[in-house]
Length: 84
Image (tube, rainbow, N blue to C red; front, side, top):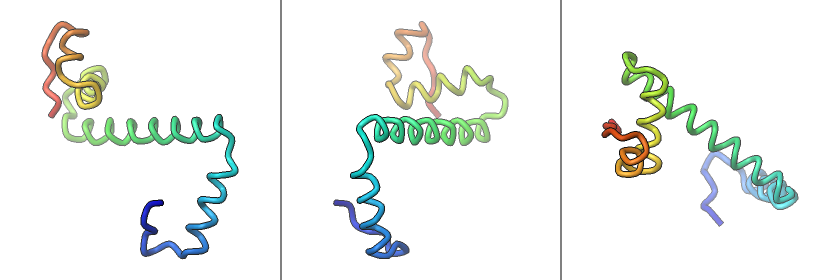
């Protein structure tokens, strides 16, 4: 089990894990999907702020490079994408 954050009481930490244990596999999968989508949106917004001149498609390609690797994206897109 992960270490409990200092700003979370032991009771709250234990309760959180009890709630997780009570979820169905489908609910856990949906939770993971929602967290992944939120993380992708956050990364998209960070790159948007860093590269305001790029199109949404270019930003998604940069995210794809970070996630899948430069070689895979180059093979699929037929061009090199700088991940920065």
